[in-house]
Length: 397
Image 1: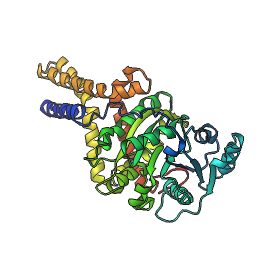
Image 2 (image 1 turned 120 degrees about the vertical axis):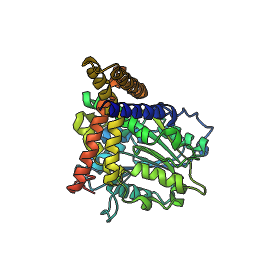
Image 3 (image 1 turned 180 degrees about the horizontal axis):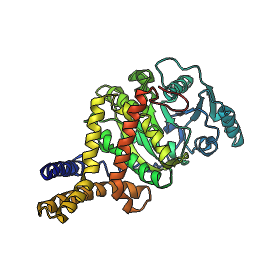
Image 4 (image 1 turned 30 degrees about the vertical axis):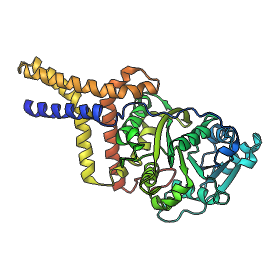
């Protein structure tokens, strides 16, 4: 047993050293969206069409829609809100908000047609927004969720980043709000695990196939989307943002498109994650989809998460217990290996915890977060078995 524990502990330590030193510095809070200066005149700024899929979002729109209608963007900007069969008067609320700030000419409410087979709700809504904007279509499309609030210079900075870097897609990981202990732990961990899967620096590296995006805020060139075959190519994708990132990076231009993904505190989700249940529902919707509904990948993921996140604290505790029980000094080395590995994972989680303005000591609870996310992944597979996978906004895919 001691030999087995020692081998697993060394494997975990080696894995964390690789992640820490050789995995695209995924744990750094970088890159970030730079500030954008003003150009001489509006003619130098390409037009932007903002597409917002909205289903029963009447309560949140007063906090978000006006931030887009009030942008200081120097070029032409239109907002198309796609009312996806809402039952709470979402479209009416949107029109009233635009009227209240004298921005009726900037807003178009698109009534959603019935969703065809093979499309997810969000992508079908985005598709209708893109189609509705085709006449005098802007060269830049901004896909943003109805719960996302933008600073006044958001569109200008996104467009400037796309132009300066010749990017076909620019995306921001919106600041996620949290309430309660579990959300304080799991929201930073959610972004941390996302960055581990899609290291932001590798996403922007045209020499690597790593591709991703954050669905709350995605600016894409219309020409690149058309060249890649349009949203039809990913119509049934539940993880729509990363699917769009892959589509653009692999097919957005000859030789591959250029994409960029960054951090921001200014683009904010106004819908807070309240407690364990809210984060759980968010994760189980797509966790098993991420594994391509593969039971082999699920088993490997569970074992890998156990080795990476639960193994080090267990090695530390077992080493101390066996050492105190008089089983030799070798047990002390087991506990030291566990402590060192736990220290490395804590070090990598600390920047994300601090980014979310939380106490650094919370970083030491990453093993607990890893355990909870493992249980979420297993529950996602269970829901798939019972026909409740991908449940969202009253729909099950």
